[in-house]
Image (cartoon, rainbow, N blue to C red; front, side, top):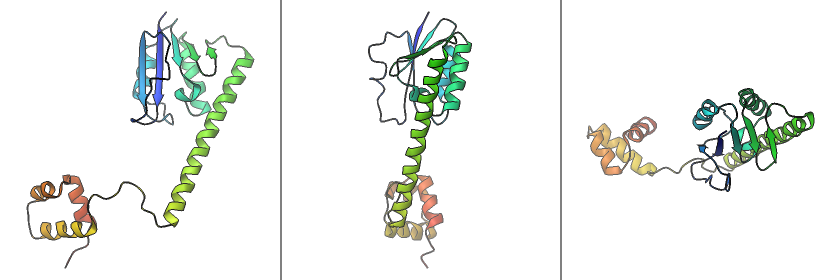
Length: 187
């Protein structure tokens, strides 16, 4: 019997160290990706790695899946292989011989996680719409001012070498071509 851990955070700047702290694990799989999709690289490796008799430790249900359908499918896949899935935060374990009350708890918690995800997305959409209506710039700030972009365009139109322009202005070749496409002709 092998104790395996699966940890997940949504972004690369988040840390996973607290998720399975204090659990003795033989192997751990760690994803830094949204749970909106179950095709996460380390999750797929984990699903392939686990064997009958293993226990998969997961900090909480929402670390494994963010919607009830994915959660039930993953649990069915794991318990179908004879793997026990242990959710530490919720104090729930599933082995395939689970009682109806435990199944109900899982479905309620999974539905709440899915509902929470939907609310987050809705608030995000509302925030973006409000920012747009106020004329705020969304996304990363431009590296170059419109004046510098016009200068680059004029110099490129005057047949200056594009590689020299990228080096001088500290932009990538891709950014240079985006500027040339976006910038109106200065004449």
